[in-house]
Image 1 (cartoon, rainbow, N blue to C red):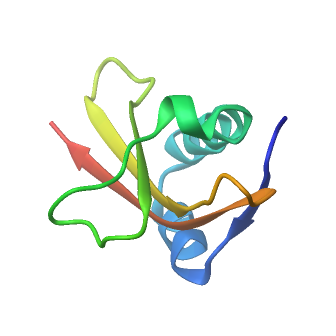
Image 2: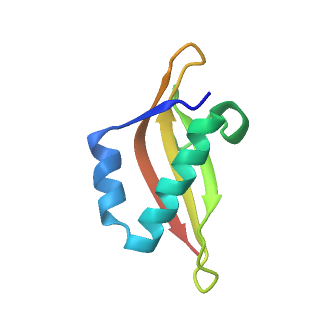
Length: 91
């Protein structure tokens, strides 16, 4: 079962700050996450807030090593994920 995805204002702002290729990758990865949030995510640890889940993945572009974290709220009894923030570390 694919979960519906809602975007918090902060996550929309985060997505808007990414270059188009990175933003496209994030959207593709969020689609994957919606299909299997329990299998692709983990509870966050420091420095992320409690009560949220995190989903980490590498960027597509081999010339830059981008590591993304998508923070979201989700309960197994819900039918939707709420994306609350997107972070990227560039190596």
